[in-house]
Image (tube, rainbow, N blue to C red; front, side, top):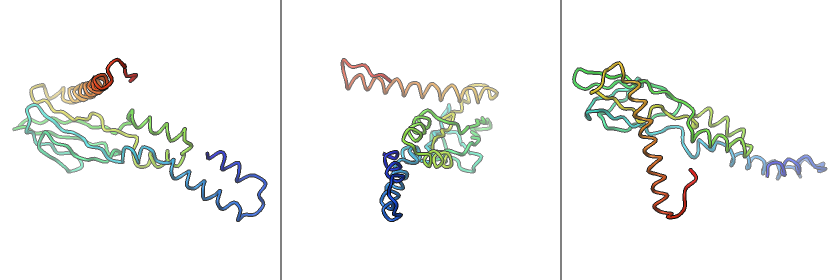
Length: 181
């Protein structure tokens, strides 16, 4: 559509006034195809905090905290540290802000749709990013030195379990059909 509008814009029309509808249509097309991730994913996400055992007090390097299990809405661009305390024990988990799978997909949709403006908006808002690990899990039954590795493995296992449950749910609603994802 944008190519057609550009072709019309640069056609043989000589009057600037006759170009106004085309310019307006180009602006509308740019605005409607821009910032797919920002619209579909938002610039913040729910980060889940859990612990073994439950009831640990968690504080982030941003100053917000809660008692596990809990969820906090955090800007996607913010990497932070979560410090869990249970009794006298502490566990520190670094949470990165990285390009996520869903963010890649919506960013690619921006490029395909010609939304260079959208790519720039998504990059500036952080809409293509995800917090990793998420959920952020502190296991007080394991050594403190392994806290980061345990948190990352736990998050990976949770994501895999959710994906498997989604596939199973699709199979249950569509017997005889096998989902491609």
